[in-house]
Length: 114
Length: 114
Image (cartoon, rainbow over all chains, first blue to last red; front, side):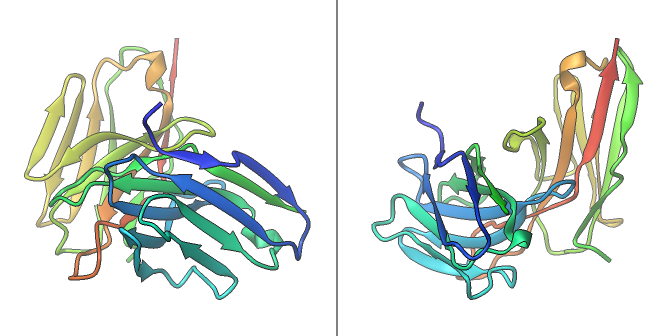
């Protein structure tokens, strides 16, 4: 499968714990995006990378959240001191760098904070 | 005005019916628009892109009215397999450091019944 992959697919954690998610984009895509989706809502933008540079962060990305893309390939999203409100589906997408590029989404990581 | 607004539905229609979804957006500078389809507990997948006044792909037609900042999606001859949530998507806006991070509507739920 040459699509976007995400691991783990599901994560259950206790409040206060740290969690890390991984996204592997489509191999030739140099743009990578993280979104969060809660029940009944559309995905909400969190942050975006072009190659290894993190170029944009939304106000939703509090200081407990950090994302990296160290070699311009896979990316990690870490949430420190998780809260129950962090429970959501975390979606990763990737795209080419072109004027009207399509974003392709991975299957998501579903996080439940108890 | 919210960035992207959609009627959440649900729309319950019989097989073979024609159904239309509407979407309004606030960013008058947007040049491209998308409809994504999301099945239950799955990732969003691109259904159609809209760059000019509209686009047609088989049973699906998307129309754009820039003056009214309004996008529609028409589905003709509905199939059971069309049952899903349809997300209206507008790029957040582009500057020299930003790619096409997306603003999603909440989605419109469609159920096609036998």
